[in-house]
Length: 271
Image (cartoon, rainbow, N blue to C red; front, side, top):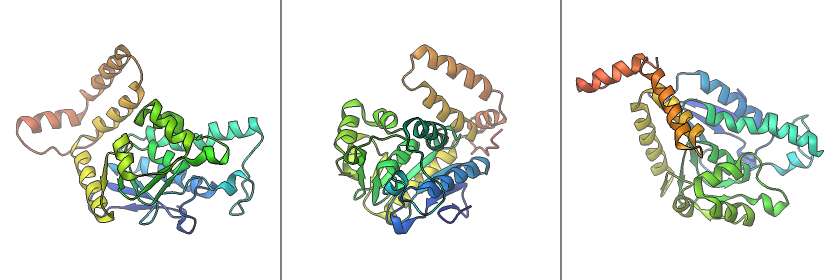
């Protein structure tokens, strides 16, 4: 694992944290960060963690895309962003966007822990997570329109799902900044905290709640909710029937059912 994206595992609980670690650049996202994030997601998808947290550390979540990467001035690697329209579209659709989509595909809940800057592609990264918690003083913006482009790693899709069409147009087309209090009011955040200590307690308590549920049910439930969003009810109910026909055969279902009947705490196996 690279030193630009770190993996930290909780000593006592099945919680894994992916930490962006380009702090001298406010965690601006360049090629090396994207490669590190991609590898980290592949690793935590396979491990025994039950909850994944994505964070940028104490000072900032992410200042967004490193503009040097888009203007051919990034000297940190040999990679050069293909800027000719068809080449850029191919690279974006087949390499960069799928990294964010992995977060939605991982059958574990992913929490964004947000402090400081949550800008542009960093904001889009948070939107790709299942849950978002932030300090009230964090700053949110999608400033792409102010440099002549638009959001392009899912912002126009995922933000609309969170805040609705009118609010998404406001945020994306104006590029204005707003704090965690407004982000919570708009529905972007699950909750806000006054400070970092409160934020960490809040996230750990929420992670504990997720761990109480059966891992197969959480994983299938996440995929089912994502797949059914925006679809008609008949389609969704067919998928619900298919998913539960599988879960009813799992060891965890019998563990959960008999534990509930016997008023005991279940010990999940994920099988």
